[in-house]
Image 1: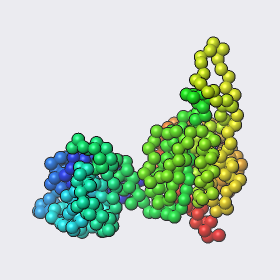
Image 2: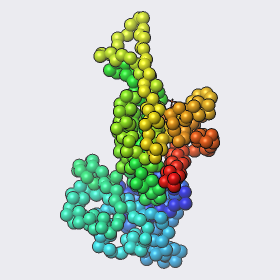
Image 3: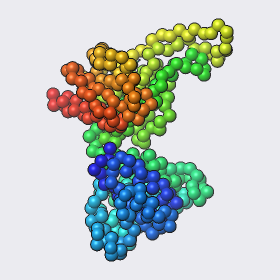
Image 4: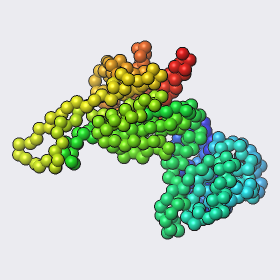
Length: 402
Ligand code: C5P
């Protein structure tokens, strides 16, 4: 998803420098081109060879290196990137940036670049809380630097508190947000994700194998495009993307209640949740005991949340559903598209390898109201999510043009 993007990763001298190596891999995996510049302090913790190997690019270390300066000057280096990420950013680097100093390759590039800069501080809690660092961080904010705040927890110096480098997934996500055009800015969207659990005693329930990956991908991509994202999620082990407003639920009835509360204010609703169609009619107060005869669990239908939304939706609201099928994919999906009053429906064939529950990939067909069927290639769920939001953005445009 970062194809064609160039990221300059500045690494300064803190113990978290080793984590920057993994960050390079995360960017490279998404096809970004990564150039690393290390301070002298960073080279005490990790060797340039590590970053050179992972990025497949030469690592910048020395402002006064004749050979590398003649190949590509620090001024030119500053012009290349679409984004500069500083991880970890030490108290010293932050102080130099706040003062506008340029006494090594990294700080010189930082003064010369016009690219957005994402600062990811990491330091001892006392250093983070020191009035000088507080003042410097305030200055960085005023200078327009973006910050991914450090996390709270146990620090390498054996102290507890704020100062750990933010989770790499949060830094990665923040970088993606800076690099993604904010095409959903000002839009409020709701995504549902995951399965629902329908209990019949305090420790057992009926459900399905949904992991929530598709819904979380939809929420992640909408957030990258600057939407206000509400994620109503059934039980899932996936971490909610930073900045996404998450509303956890367990049962279909709870999901219905959470969705109903939010729905009237939403510009678009994408129901990717695998809602259980039935729930047990009875909930035993205690764990059911094993018997020779077995048990019969009677089921009653759950409300169809999406169909309900389709009957009350405001004219300008975009409504999208998913149809996961094991047979007659197109006929079943078309029926749901009309019956639930949707703008379009995303159909996936559960019997296909690499698609559906639990996979990171999906091969889907999109059915529009005019009868068009668009077959999307086999791709990651993030990419499928991108296609879904592209379509929703086009519908927003056509509604606005009316
Ligand atoms: O009817 P089916 O379950 O296949 O429909 C799939 C679509 O309807 C999905 O978008 C799903 O989130 C939604 N749905 C719902 N409430 C239900 C069942 C499905 O909103 N009870």
